Length: 281
Image (tube, rainbow, N blue to C red):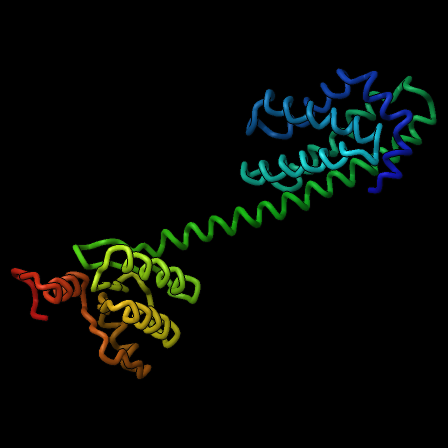
């Protein structure tokens, strides 16, 4: 909505908002509080809407001033907050649209037909603000989802220190390009930080190994070698071994072990440690 429409609504609507502030604001707070269903307190709703009410009033009085920008900024902040709190975009936008109902209920006796004519412009202005709120919410929610996906990705690809000079990379689930990149970056950084010579990549939790997964593993191993570290792949179950053989996938001179214990024993021997009761390297 342009500043022209809000300016057209100003003479009567701005006066109504000022003269019937308590009634309109109180009804707006009541409507929005009902819609939140207890997810935020009435005090929080009152604080947010009181600020917005003053900004709406100021934007109507001076459409070309800075208040209009402040109003949209405040609505953007609320939209992002609602996105993080789990509100739907419709619930977020309706909180803005509810101001129209609160104002409409207070139109009687406020100036006759001219007020209703101005209310049409006012209603369109609030619709524009509600749609802007909806768009901001959608963008904020997409960012929340992206952040959560990144956090889950990091949690699903941990790199841990198993022993002095030995890192462990337990993989669970499907290994794709995004996860490979996270594994590689995290592992290389920890190799540099700890000066480790061995990295044990355990694929016990990887449900299947195909050509693409094998290529991802090989890239990770090669990246570690560039850092002067040796990788050992463990957790190759009989089914996966059969699949790898059937696909003709070659791991070359990469050391592979059937279990994490065997891989750790190999790495410890390579570090000059004596392992009692372990299998031969």
